[in-house]
Length: 245
Image (tube, rainbow, N blue to C red; front, side, top):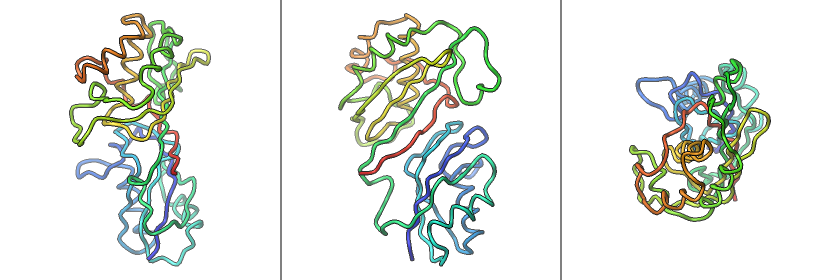
């Protein structure tokens, strides 16, 4: 028995998120089924990040145990020949038997993209959130300074979350504009349910002038979901990658 790690990229548009569920097609479900057929044994993958429906990824990480004699680095080639076009393995390799992507120390990086212009662009509709009111990315960037560090992010946690603590650490954060595209990038050691999307929705409210950047401090202190902004739509969010330590 050996443990194989995969770096998985996917377009989440047509999926009900990462995690296997009985009433919908998921990334994990497709991987499990395809790997089981390829290797001739029942395979159950474990993902590092259980992304929501519609969320995309360049570099989610998954592991599985197998008795196959296929070298770890070759599994990606065989798997990509069988997977649908919107899921692709970027790397496969054998790892230590005790490597677990959820319990190892790591940092995850997400980006939320906002198409900020008068009219939408059809080719961007699946991978960015169209927002036609003018956004001030400088104020949005200023607001991120209140979020960096270790805080209680209860105000930025979706109601479905079942966690022991809402304390999390954001290690870096930035906001920038490239033409009509405003990008929010956030890196942290762990995230709550919908945390990045709620942060993004709150920063949008600051960017459109509803609130000053320093309001973020009051939102954090409130520890109340009602204090923060809306949950930004899923399709604007992409898991960029995960770094393990």
